[in-house]
Image (tube, rainbow, N blue to C red; front, side):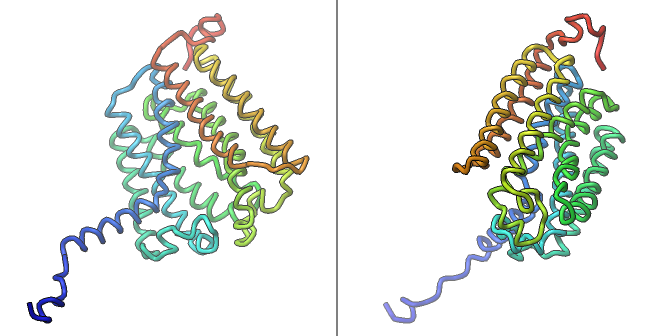
Amino acid sequence: MSSAVRHAPALPRTGTSRTGRWRRVLRSYFALTKPRVIELLLVTTIPAMLLAARGVPSLWLILATLLGGSMAAGSANALNCVADVDIDAEMQRTRARPLVTHEVPLRHALIFGIALGVAALGWLWATTNALSALLALATILFYVFGYTLLLKRRTAQNIIWGGAAGCMPVVIGWSAVTGTVGWPALVMFGVIFFWTPPHTWALAMKFRADYQRVGVPMLPAVASPAYVTRQIVVFSWLMVAWSLLLVPATSWVYAAVAVLAGGWFVVMAHRLHAAVRCGAVASPMRLFHLSNTYLALVFVAIAVDSVLGWTPLAVASGWASGLS
């Protein structure tokens, strides 16, 4: 065999390389939507819809609401990445995001985020109702302009008020079923509202140096660990107390889970605060992961309670003849 034949270069596999490139592009755009954040949408929206229907609404309505809500959340997250590309490049946990690594051009990401938002508005308007579509639009606008551009880099209360955007999936889910916003939807909104600070601050305690480096005044970056954990305890109590406001609209199933899971969370929040105060080794990430488990347990309990269809405690006790 001649040397020329032995060392002939392999022919390029054009189809395979093109397919791989498209896969990388799709993965990059998908990453812009922050799919792990969208998990919150799935965990909270379906139980809210089940409670609103006091049973199981149509599968089509559930899927349509989840798709529209996912597009709305993806739009807000992609636009957040566009606005925060400068600080994402400096923070350890965000350096691999597609805009930082230039896998997606900034202009393309902006167009992608806006297009997703428009698609979400049109889809929810066509498949659910105008109220749900407008609530989704308001959520996108508040997250981008209220939290990302106004609050995030200016105040240590950024996540308290900015976190309201993450509470909206339950309200959208409720309105998709009923066409209105009932008081149980506002209670579920409040549970997530009070849950967000302990969840976020626990994570921010680990990445405190990152936030300090980029000048984002997340509470753990500007306050002592003892003060931060004290605020975590306060919001944990508020979260658990607020969750009990939903008991009249549910049965003992939800009530039991809310009390037990809430008690567990409060105990762990106090333990974190105690460890910080006495100078022991603290593990804020343990509370961060626990917060995800807590939220899942509470909303799974809402879902199970709704599907079982047992008489709400307020009705069973004679407090109310009906709930709306």
